[in-house]
Amino acid sequence: MSILSARYIVEKEFIRDYTVKQIDSKLYHGTLKGSLYCPTPNCPSRVSYVNGLRPILKTWNKDDHDPDCEHAFERLKGRVGIDTTQFIDVELSPERKKRALKDALAKYNMSEDEIEQQRQKRTTKKDNPTTIIRNSKPSANLVLTNGEEVAGVGNTGFRGPNLRKRTPDMLKDLDENQPRLIMGLVKDVRLIESTAEVVVIEKGVETHVKFEEVFYANSPTYSGLFHLIKRYKSEMTRVVFTGIGQVRLSTAKTHYELSVFNGEDFEVNGMILTTLAAYYRGA
Ligand SMILES: [Zn+2]
Image 1 (cartoon, protein in one colour):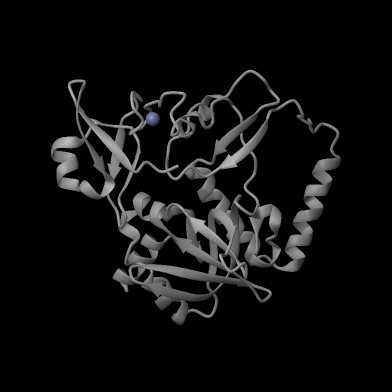
Image 2 (tube, rainbow, N blue to C red):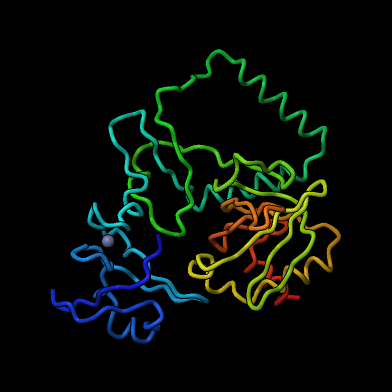
């Protein structure tokens, strides 16, 4: 649930409420920073203001909400209990996401023969009796947390579930509202003001990749760079998109969409958008 307003409190005294729209960078950094609190009365969590195309308020890094606060779940995500049957929400580290994107591109570019070879290698490994099957681990939910830090995961020694890789033609009901890595060919880049929609296609099936509010809050430097993908697409015969985000069905239910939350979470031919921008600056 997004935080729409904040209480401005100075020396424990409530001064006034601020909605997101009433704040700008200057006011925030000059006056409000550190003194804005969650809108829920008596909730001790501070909130920070993140400027971007559409500014947002988010939970102050490592502050905890009151357990009864409607925004509390954000901070409780990833908390690990003793009960091993419970679900744990696991967020992928930036390093793991990066590796997953590289792996996906390599896999996507592999020939049928190479895929078969790799499959056989894996099957051989599975038959190895020394392989330990761990089944006492708690189940894990993979989550994408819009850039929020997730507590507890780092010191559990729990590696977390694998991010599932899909091409647009493979997506089905089960993938809805789940984090997925999508890979496929870029068919089209539609520029819409300073954002864009990247149409990824596989076997005639499209997934439309969206970059929304959260994306620009996390990666404000990316707005206005999307035309470079369009340009790159016009110059290259083959552009492969790999990206991590949340899958959903389009409003018209005609295709799936992937909402990406971070600039580093997607690549074209193995390049993040800022790398592509550097490539054109150098050219
Ligand atoms: Zn709160």
